[in-house]
Amino acid sequence: MKNSIKITMSLALVALFIVGLFGAIAPVHQSADVEFDTAIGANETSSIREYEFDSILISPPSNTGYGVSFSPDGSLMAVAHASPPFVTIHNTSDWSKLLNPAVLPAGTGNGVSFSPDGSLMAVAHNTSPFVTIYNTSDWSKLPNPAVLPTGTGNGVSFSSDGSLMAVAHSTSPFVTIYNTSDWSKLLNPAVLPAGTGNGVSFSPDGSLMVVAHTTSPFVTIYNTSDWSKLPNPAVLPTGIGYGVSFFPDGSLMAVAHNLSPFVTIYNTSDWSKLPNPAVLPAGNGYGVSFSLDGSLMAVAHNLSPFVTIYNTSDWSKLPDPAVLPAGSGRDVSFSPDGSLMAVAHATSPYMTVYAVTFEELELEIISIPSSTATFVSESPSWSYAPAADQPGVSWSVSGASFLSVSSNVIVVSSAIPSPSGQYQDYAITVTATLSGFDNGVQTFTLRVWADLTFTSIP
Image (cartoon, rainbow, N blue to C red; front, side):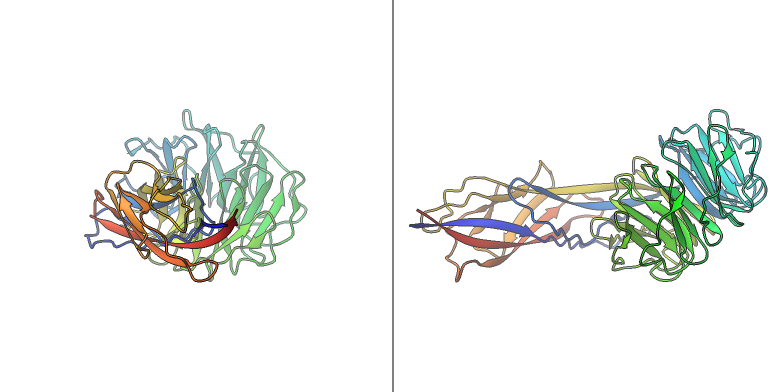
């Protein structure tokens, strides 16, 4: 009978970034402590991202920004705001401001949204007709719907197929839904939101519509097939709902609200509430948005830093951008390709736009025969290595004398000592040193706990 060693690697990765001190205008490399809960075995890959949020100078709106939206192709960004022209539209290729539409919204713009095909843009505002719809080909104003929202428009959203448009507003029925083929008003849901509608959103597949509103339960969810109201989540938002957003695949829904924890996230399969992030937004949440790839969630809120960004893999908070929005964050939106994040806020310049970039370090466990690693007469064959060619990354390892680095690949380099008992936990520290970043060399540490188990082989 011979004993052979089988190495099972269950990984918990903790990223510890050491960032140098730089001036406020220097690009900030955003990172978060990352912990992977799932086991990663041979030929599987894990990764960690380091984000940058670099502010971009644009021609500012004329007053407080309340809503922001990107066109589906990312070529345009619109800001709904106080003071004429009440909506400002930028070309994102050069950040030039488009000419104002000939017919402006009638009052303070509170929300703005593009149709899925980009052919329409709607602005919710505080004076009748409470919503203004534009043809984006020439920025002409469409005729008002025959039946208008009954009060101040606070939010507006299109369904994913563009067949419906909903306006959240201040007076009963608190949400008005239109068929975009003829702008006829649909019948009100049998059960209305309980108070002023502040935000509205459709799920990515169009099966759900959610209204964030004043008065408990603060969020009301409808099945769009028959406009029946779904049962309230068991755990409600703690205060007035202002903004609502779905994860790109529809599996999560987030509500920004006043009162701690300021954002509440639900699993849409059973409407259970996810645990709160360890670090909460600093104040009342007014807007919330997910990036299109689902890797980030941002909350706009009323206290500094005015926007809080989370890594959705573990809900860790990313470091704040070096240049913060200048005042209370009212809304936040990501461009479709995730390369931009825009925050509408109080205090000049009323809108802050960030270029979002990241460095991604991938690690992979790969099987490589090792003739030097033995226990009795059987050899494990494994190593720990970068998943791809990554210049500027060098590796070191500690915590296990039988591991070493050869050509930047961590290998079993000597006989593994016989453990006491059936297995032995080795706290192995793998350090990758990254060079070439704007703010110098950084390091992070991966701790790998390897259970060494033994099986009998005839």
